[in-house]
Each structure stands twice: as C-alpha cells, then as structure tokens.
Length: 243
Image 1 (cartoon, one colour):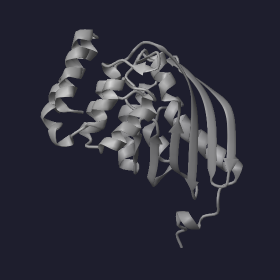
Image 2 (tube, rainbow, N blue to C red; image 1 turned 30 degrees about the vertical axis):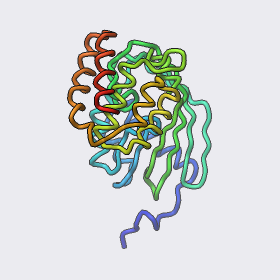
Image 3 (cartoon, rainbow, N blue to C red; image 1 turned 120 degrees about the vertical axis):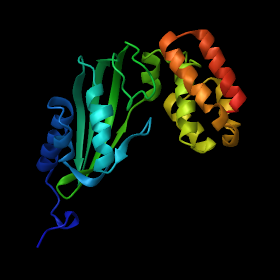
Image 4 (cartoon, rainbow, N blue to C red; image 1 turned 180 degrees about the vertical axis):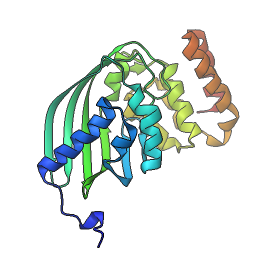
C-alpha cells in the first residue's frame, strides 16, 4: 500500500533540520529550482507577508523561484542564523541578512528598481511540514526599516514617487478592495504620505481602470529618470483616478 502524506510518521527534529537545510541549499547554494521543489509537497504555499509575494502549488512556485526569487539575490549576500525553534512538524528560524540592493528583487521590493543601497534586515521564517516534505513557509520582516534603508521612506513618510505609485498601481491592478489595500500599505510602510492615504481611503475602483495605464506608464518613466516632476505628474494622475 502507498502511504499517504498524512499517514506518515512525523519527522524528528533532526530530520526537520536536514530537510530545511536541503531546501535552503537549493535556494541559495546550487540555485536549483527543481531540487528546491523536491523538498515540498504538491500544494505547498510560500508567502512573504509584508509584500504578499510567493505562490501556492508547485506550478506557481516553480515560476516564482525561477524568475523572481533565486536569481534576485545580490552577490554580496550574507546570512547569519540568530535563533531556531523546533516544534511538532514546524521550525522557526531568525536570520540576520545583509546585501546591497543592486538587482531587481520583485519578491522583496516589488516594482522597485535597484537602489544600490546597503540593506540590513532580520527575517523570521516560519516553516510547517506535512509528512516528509515542506508544506508552508511564511516569512516576516520589518518592511518600514527596509524602505528607509532603500531611500524610499524619509522621516517615517514615503516618498510619493516609487513607493506610493508602485503600491497603488499594484493593488488596484489586482482589484483589491480599498480597505485591504490600505491595510497592506500600512503594513508595508506604517506611515505613507497623509494625502496619499486619504486618496486611497476615498478610492473608487469603478473609476480606476481608466487611469491605471497612464499611472503605470509614469511609474516606468520615473524609474528611468528619477525626476521629481514626474512624481508630481504621477500624483496628479492618482488624484484624477481617485485612488
């Protein structure tokens, strides 16, 4: 008889650590997408909570690891384990990570071009297992601190260009409810420009589609030019769109 995942005996603490080490090796050492996926169940779920990136199921995760996660890490990455807690079918790692943001990192700073800033961040990684495979990863960090180091938060407030526009266009393009969009903005930035928050609260998705393409184009222009006049134009478009 073939033993189902749910019928298998739980892994010992040592086995959990071995499996997790194998998963990390595929992500960071061999950079092997299939080896990484081989450590996971078919409907595995990965979520980077502050920015809601990752995927569910091996098909989605294959594209995520191949295109967004594995190739995005800068060459000067340093990762230091700080603490580990192991429980019944789960493991929690605390990691101190430093790198230079000199490559696009869509899973970490979505829609933000390289800032060439030094980033120091502490990750908390919650890993859950089912049978002898990884079932779920949830990764947490203080994104406001990251945004400040990347030059996207100034004095606790977001610059109205890259941070605001990338988030606003992303959320509304995905047709998220306005309350959810506002909650996620608060989680990512804690404090966003007051006027921008007010605009998001008054968001009217029925009028947003007409302006989304224009706002997205302005984001692309701003990426290339880093021009404050473009930021002003982009905010004007967002106001017109009432988002």
